[in-house]
Image (tube, rainbow, N blue to C red; front, side):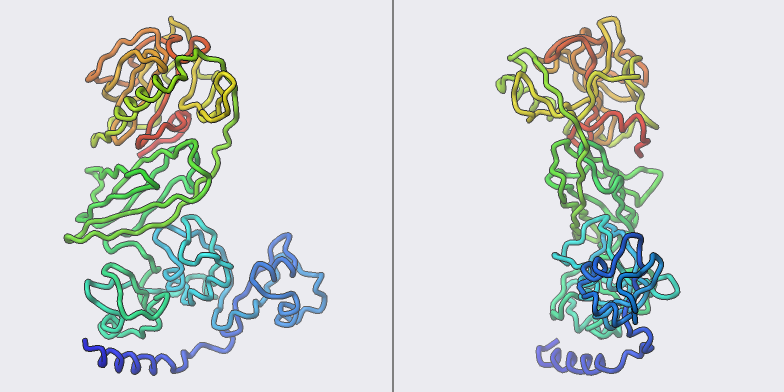
Amino acid sequence: MKPWSSLLLLMALVAGSLAPVGRASAQEAGPIYIVQEGDTLSTIAIRFGTTVEALVQANGIADASIIAPGMQLLLPGFEGVSGILSVHQVAFGESLASLAGTYRTSGAALAKLNRLVNPERLYVGQPAIVPEPANGSPAAAGARTYSAGQGLLEAAVEWGANPWLLGNPGLRLWRVAGQRAYLPGGAGAASDLPRGVSSVTVSPSPLVQGRATIIEVQADPEVQVQGRLGERALNFMSPEASPGTWIALQGIHALQPADLVELEIRIQIAGAEIAHRQPVPVVDGGYGRESLQVPPQTLDPANTGPEDERIAEVVRTASAEKLWEGVFHFPSSYFETFPSRYGTRRSYNGSAYSYYHTGLDLYGNPETPVLAPAPGIVVFAEELTVRGNTTYIDHGWGVYSGFLHQSQIFVHPGDRVETGDTIGMVGATGRVTGAHLHWEIWVGGVPVDPMQWTEIVFP
């Protein structure tokens, strides 16, 4: 389309957009906020960027000191926005534009309602205030996808839509292939997820320091899925019995800052790659502290560095076959109490608390068997300086278990083990203060809390 013809088309479409929308006058009054326990007019005014005086005037309140839970208050200053305000938990794939499309309002109104500092960065799980219509369900907003080389005006003509109502953050004449637009009168809620992807779920959400998370993508069968969480590539697997389902298990480092981390989902479809990125919050794991005295050579970087690198290489690969089912079993018969839990911040020999415990310690002695917690393949069985006699088992999908400080090792790399098989004996080798079993679970190259795997069934 020539530039001058695009301009004429834009002028015609804009002229059409100036016609009255046709809303009832009652709907133009503004959104309704339902007073909650502990609210005052002052806190409500601050929350929504208005004043007590404006609230009193808009609602005809005789005594500003008396409001009660359940009372409905009209919020002034949001002309064109209607409905009862509720809280919507932002899902992966939702943005300010898609929420505006779903609830048939403007991005500017939502940004104002939520006092957003950065409207372009809604995070997964963020509580967003949205205007629910009177019938309790959002108005439908059909989603369309821009094709390669398709501009805003061409799309508006093809879809029979007003360019001002396409859910765009600003009127730009160019668009990116795969970008979504939202049309009134369509079916279903709007989303920024790439074409071919129906949902992306993160569990648990928010992410927790030192725990594994499940990222599940539901997509068309022909879609290929990849992704990253922060700096780590995700190992997406698609079970044969569930075509179109992609699952990645990923550990969150115990020292990961309690902040936002970027989740990126990339898909391959029809020879094109489309990506969506959105922050996910990480919360503190609530770990304690302990101070230990250990042999100095087990703290020497000349020993710890190469050893850490060897183990990182061992647990790097994500095998395609998932070998376990259900929860993991404890690798020892002593699991009522624990001498030290995962994630504890540690001081060694008077150092700062810059270390942390990468596993769960279980009581035992050289006569206590070490048991396989789940089916898998032995991939490492050696004596190390820091870890002592060590065994690692690959359970598939990037999940590994490790067993440190053993007095004896009974298995070899390549051995297949089943739940409850004896793989060694508890000992006191390596960096220890006494005999015990140090048990690790690694997920996506990160050690996580083994207790989680004894309590939750991971897919």
